[in-house]
Length: 243
Image 1 (tube, helix red, strand yellow):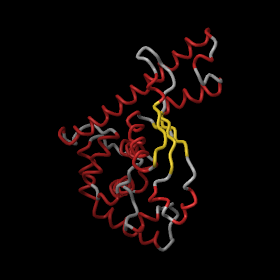
Image 2 (cartoon, helix red, strand yellow; image 1 turned 60 degrees about the horizontal axis):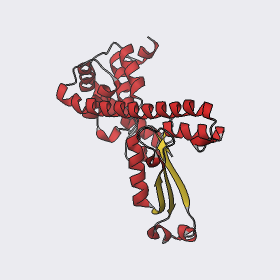
Image 3 (cartoon, one colour; image 1 turned 135 degrees about the vertical axis):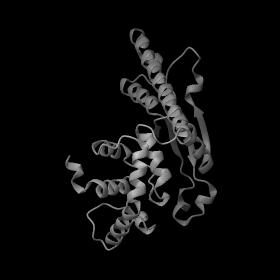
Image 4 (tube, one colour; image 1 turned 180 degrees about the horizontal axis):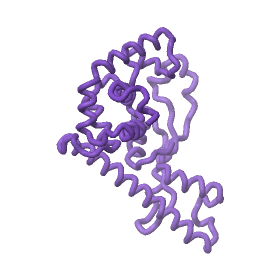
């Protein structure tokens, strides 16, 4: 399994340790010296935990093992390239190629470090948003924070299309956080009425939208982005998308 950020690798390894019986674990990158670049990955050999084997449908899997490899996408790119070129060990490469190969490894490690920097800076920015106030020029992270603070938590999705909503707001001339909050204050009650109507139609099977059954069960139809697009319809009319 591959992840975008190095910290997610550590989180995945922790989950594997907690949820499987680990027979073998090796961090391949630990063998690299400080002045070396190369393949990095965490390899596991695991079995199901005894409590899982007590489940009737899993009882026959006690003898089975599975291998799990955990790394970042950059590390996975290195692994795929090495395998395709048959340079599974860097020493397998001709001397004339080794320098270029190590240079690629160094660049991929820099990619991981810079992505981790972006991830941390974004988290730091999001933590400062509330303290700095919402009346700032809109960006995706500020917009997400405004919606989280001003719309019902029950409608929130872990991953929502805030980037498209930001384009929609720009198209309507909404450029600052305070303007978004003003629209929510003005139209949220009616948007929630529209949500209830859409929910009722979806529960009756009368909708053209693809709907997550768990959301219907929880009594919600629109996500935060959906509610906000409803609010734009109420403020600017349904033809605003054509402008």
